[in-house]
Image (cartoon, rainbow, N blue to C red; front, side, top):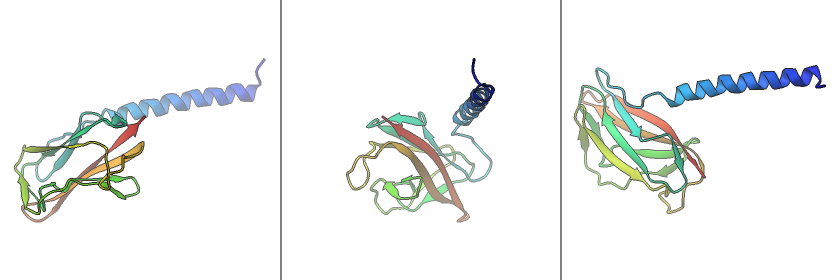
Amino acid sequence: MLAKSLVLFIGIGLIAGLVFGIYLIDVKSNSQLVYVEGSSVSIVTEKSDFKKNEEINIRIVNSGTTSLIFSDASYGLRITGLSGILMYTPSAAQVVSSLEPGDEISFSWDQNKNDGDVALEGLYKISVKGMDELKNKVENSITVAIWK
């Protein structure tokens, strides 16, 4: 017969795992694209978990009702580790770019860093920064995971 404390700890573990699993399903199912009144930018990927060496398609969408202005042709796109260390940014001309309400631009990342090394498994933050017509900062970010 099992000790009462062992049964208790296994029961607590099962309940905690169930609650955490339901929480993660709820977090993962949140829509990345929500249209709002005013200034807003959204980052959309086809999923949040990617296999190693799988191409990641990224859509930057003006999900607001005002025009957005970006300082270069990369539309302020940056991919960093969770620690903030820059991993990748598209090479782009230094021209001012803009997105009208509802417009979008697409980029793809082959999981290679700017220095040519391949990104390791882990969590990465994809972020975008721009300005609206009144020079207010408009930014957004999402987190994606790269697994084996």
